[in-house]
Amino acid sequence: MRRSGPWSADGFPGILVLNLFLLAVLQPAAVRRAAAAEAGPALQIAVGFDGSCPHDPAGVKREGPNRFRILPSWRPSVGIDEEAVGRSTRLGFQVVNSTRNAAPVDLLIDWQYDEAPPKDRPSFASIEEFMSYRNFVVVRWPGSDQWRTLMADVDGSVARVEFEAPPGTTEVHWHPPYNYAQSEQFVDSLRGHPLVKIEKIGHSPEKRNLWLLRITDASPRTKKGFLIRARVHAYESASSYAMEGMVEWLLSGDAYAAAALRQYEFHVIPMANPDGVHNGLGSLTAPQGVNLSSIPYQPDAASLPLKEAVDRARPAVAIDLHNWQNKHTDGLLGLDPAIRERFERFMPDQLGFGKQWAIRDPQPLPEKTPEKELLRHYCERNFQATVVTFEFPWFGRTPQDMRGTGRTALWALLRALDPPPEGLR
Ligand SMILES: [Zn+2]
Image 1 (tube, helix red, strand yellow):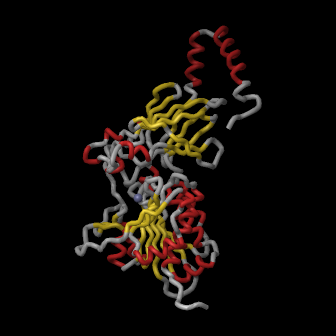
Image 2: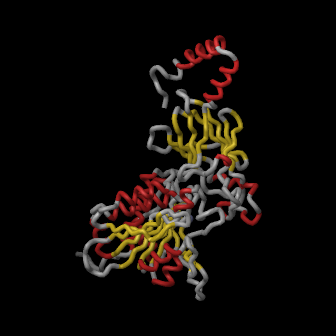
Image 3: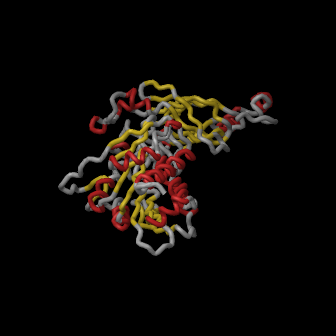
């Protein structure tokens, strides 16, 4: 990250000191004060961009020239659930160094665990457990496209991160982000593809696009519906990358992908909650908004386009993509044990990423239809679908790893659903 040349850290201060000396000697005090004000502090924290959290400068407190307290659970109005004080599952901001030299920055990321209102108290055994998922950040240095993990020093619910901020803009997030603009770009990249139909199924309450990608081959045979839903929960950027990996694989020309496109019509909802994603929320559509993981039978405005898309897909198979904060386990939830056992042979514990499967087998559906139910239950009840919820957490994975994880998971599920015939050929 060190620069060399005329503005290197070694060469520059000498010139600066000389200039400051001349400035002090030759200019009146008023001019000196104006010059200092114009220069401003060397480091700024930038927020308010697509996907930032906090989403307003009110969530950032300057505590020294290079020291800032960051409040990830700052919201523009009182929030509930993961938007309540002390419950945030989101973090993303920029350290902007407008000088020509690296400068030390001291970040106190205050997750405010003890300030959570009693009814919204996080369901963790202790503050230590809560913070064990928050004892790191990922950073992307100016000009780089790689995310690097920096471990934090934890004291109470504050994760302290210190580093030398190079000149330019350094991104600091809890996890590699995937914002609304990235989703729009991904959808755009598929326009004109012969195997993809892009449909706008509606818009979010703040008028962002809700897309459906329909992917199948040109065969006139009747296809079974296969639903893939990503990003109902705003912070779960892994689900977006896993979805990209699934779509890219389906379009790759791979033999098993081609076979799947002959058998199924894939209905992909790439970003179910664009408002929550853009506004830097944890899980909901707004600070007191909707949790889209359930499908209501009498849908609200935010849920209606999604429910209609699911009803139209009539899925025989569905994947609900999530990422929980647990560092060490991937979630394999709700898959029928006979299929799940076959699935695990094709996608065993992802030990290379430090993950083992955490398995939750399906429970019988409640007999009486509730007012709303998880996508999983909704598709089982209404379409007798085979449904799985995946939870793919970040720690130890890059965005490219996450695309690969999605690709493997879809391939393994298709393999699990397609047992070989008896006998050898
Ligand atoms: Zn989730």
